[in-house]
Length: 171
Image 1 (spheres, rainbow, N blue to C red):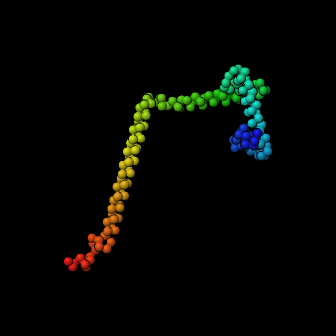
Image 2: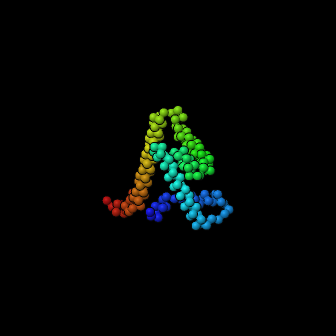
Image 3: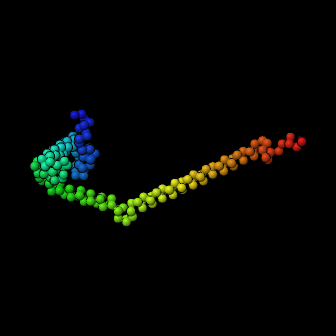
């Protein structure tokens, strides 16, 4: 396995450093200790996930569930972590439920999706019309400026409307 493959299979160092800093804010941790902690955490995750996968396969399931992970903790002698892990599972379920409730806010508006789409299309059309009007006004202003510049240039040019030419008097 290459070095790059090893890095893909570990916890990001920045995340690990943040956790260490949160847990031990007043203690300095040497880089080799950080590396050891990182490797231990990675190995722990591999161990638990492998065991949870075996439990899942024994139950002829295709997806590892939180219950499989909790059983793996017990089977590998990490039962002390079970309560904390169950609390995390419950927190995750609450966050997921909250997300589902937020994602259904449109449903609670009482406006059918078709009506919302129609309103959106109206807003887009209005925005396009305003943009076209702004571009038209800008083009007209540019045309007026060009015309004014041409008139000023014509007045300053020899033989222009305000210039006097002695030859014109000799007809």
